[in-house]
Amino acid sequence: MTKRKNVLSLIVLALLILTAVLNLNTYNYAKNACIENGKTPIVDSTFLSFNWSVSCE
Image (cartoon, rainbow, N blue to C red; front, side, top):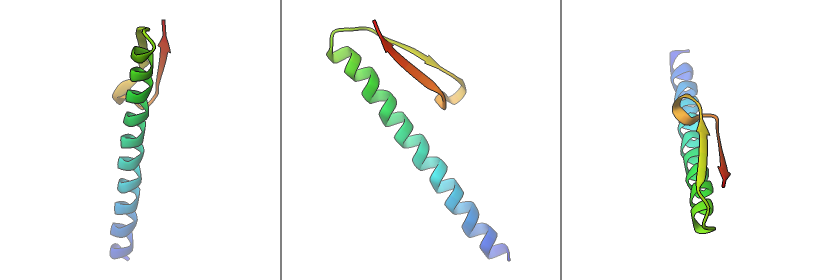
């Protein structure tokens, strides 16, 4: 039973890490798109940047 819990814990941890990495890549892409278009990115994010928004002005 503990082996099953360990495997499940590893899968959940891997999914959280994957989500964080993909979220960071999307965040950086949005900021760079604003800069490439000659605009200033205005970033609003919460704790650990789990919830963020980028607007270009």
